[in-house]
Length: 160
Image (cartoon, rainbow, N blue to C red; front, side, top):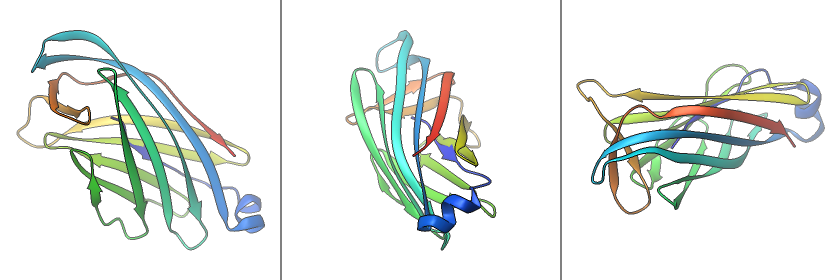
């Protein structure tokens, strides 16, 4: 239920194989009102991905909420959306060496930004409501949940 982005890829890593591989992890909580009212629901995710010298990128992220997991595949060079559980997924190269992964759901977009510097990287998460919407939608693989803004406890990234 999160989304991603990547900046400043190491030139040495790119030169060696034309690809930088990374692993991301995130965790947090969310309060939901419908279909069942629940507070402090744990949400988490982990994934792996790569960014290539030709500007293409891909990632696979598994997010877990409500005890169910959903796998989202991100693929792209030009930022075209592809089908994903509950919505669409977009991988967008967002700078000279950056990548942003976005999961588009009915009421919002979940985004993770990943910055790579040398042999280290960092990740951040944001949830953005679409115009006119008041609740966030989260998809657990079966149904939509209508919730407050997800709260991120941690987000991390490692170069592999």
